[in-house]
Image (cartoon, rainbow, N blue to C red; front, side):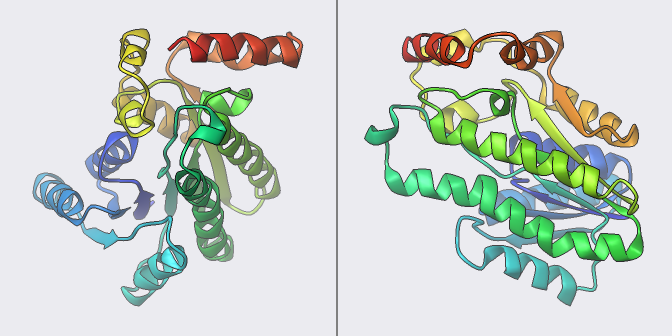
Length: 259
């Protein structure tokens, strides 16, 4: 692969993807809202790894942002060989008591922007018969989570959508993988406005570096799904297969309400 485009690249898993791919001498296009953070990261990676790093500042919750990202890469003559749809966020609380605009923006970022970018870049990959897409979901994709109702629903969409694209493209030269991490070193809990007590219940998050390496190893092996973060997460995503859904969701409601 020659050039990777990463959304949500200014921190967390997105930034870690950028650093890991840069160490493999892959050129980058990094996308996020924060110009200062992106420019700082780009300069670090250019100096350390002697690669090309393009910065695109866009808020992907805004209408037309994904098209502008595509047009900017096209105008620069860039061929995107690896698309990493990482940008996303959650929001903790009772659905009807949370800010509606934030819920809609979450759907726009976690689902709509991901679908649009995939639709924009996939045709070129298929034409070249070469390329890959990593869509970042979550172990929350496997079950409906009270107090994270919209977030878990968006990640369920990403999982289903990505698995279907993996099957559609098996013989096109394009590989699609969905990454489903559990709690990971990032600002997720802060951005989702979890209460302070949640930090103590997630005091041992997975390393973002380990999660990214698991994803890239899975991509190399042509896997459709990578559940990252250890055996416990793999156990968690399989539990829903064996329990009645009402029992499972009711149990989760009690656990998440007590956070």
